[in-house]
Image 1 (cartoon, rainbow, N blue to C red):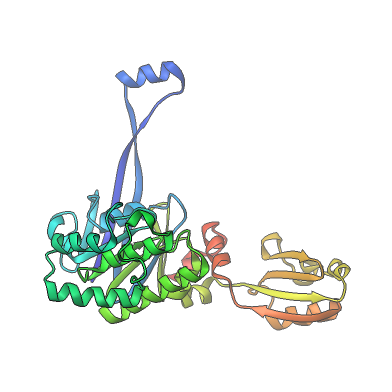
Image 2 (cartoon, one colour):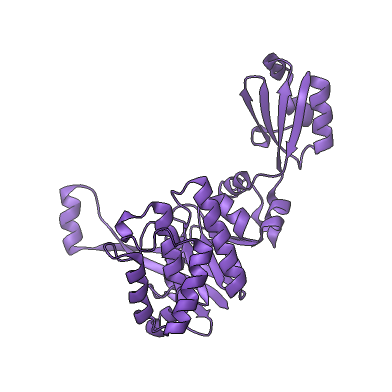
Length: 339
């Protein structure tokens, strides 16, 4: 459905020396440098797949998405989405995609939601029967009934997000781009949005590219992720593979008989740990220990804990995706392992 090969986007940046003198010089002798916002991305997305597209701020995510949606033209490389090149035939292409950009709405602010959808019906040239059928489906999945007659400006953030997703799906697009669809929402509304995205994906077999900073979105919606940093691919694979490959950090939650027991732990001596191999956080009698399981096995660590301190309760947690991604961004893992 989506084929991206060696995609690059470069921008010219003007370099100005500081002060008034620098401003005057730049008028006559303009210096520029090339900034590579996206640098050689290659990946494919199959029909009906939900792909998590993640990276830190400034990684090049937004630039890549703008090229995928046809807003920007690549400097080089190729893009093919459902047989079309996004930036070459935008009028035809936009009829086959849906886009939701976080806090930016595509809805008419002062119109009731029903009228907004009627306007979009005419824009996308949807026939009456198809429109009625589609609205019934979206109303059922996204629960629009309670506010569908209200002006958009009166909707809560959660209601508006559901309304925006419905607007983006009204014309049954083949591909849906979701940029931070749960940003700013409370836990219950986030959960409802995720369930709706899953249902739309399964019923319509819609291919979805999801960009988000909420790692719960990734864990609940995506089996595969593409991670980029500084415009380059950092990781492309399944979430489970990333955990297996990079998830060396394990967490042990320990309830101690007395918080003074924590002073007995000397992991550097016991396991030859270095500073980045472990982290200890104390909350009263509770100790949260994160450690590198590549250097100390879980059974060995549990044996050490039980022999070292008086313990009332103990629990081992699986690798935390947020910790894994944080370590990848800090280059604390060997990125060559994935190849």
